[in-house]
Image 1 (cartoon, rainbow, N blue to C red):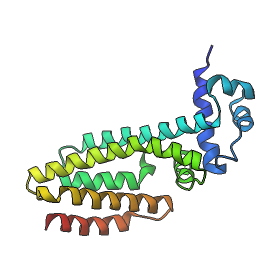
Image 2 (image 1 turned 180 degrees about the vertical axis):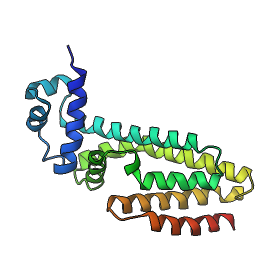
Image 3 (image 1 turned 90 degrees about the horizontal axis):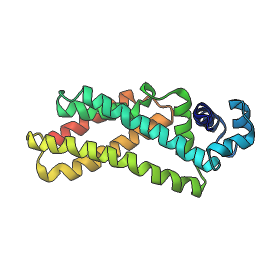
Length: 195
């Protein structure tokens, strides 16, 4: 019988250890010891570290998507520019919905050097990127419908917004306080969109 509690604990311990020690520094022996099971029991649940890594990434990305969806649902009656700002702020300040271990994990993932793991991450990030793209596109299309933005400018506005989002996310990974930068950049970005 599969013990699902152990299965979840393995993922939690992997996230913690990976954040502290990286992929190579996180051994199956260590995970088994932390969970209180035999090394062989890990292979009852997972085929190996790559699968554990994949599931840990999926768990964190899914948590981000759910948090963003919930926040935008709560804020759906706000003006569209505020929704876009909230999305930027949420992605930049993921500490509002991720644990310290999950943030440390995310930072380690951002500096991976293994081409095999990077390939895995790229595939996993496609789902998150598609979600962000769909969300941002919907909001900008609504902006055009409300005459806040010319229709022919939607694609450019989305591209610049994505660059802004990615830049602020990278700053947040570097432990930089991106709040002030976020406010300045947003003000100039939105002025440019509306002009």
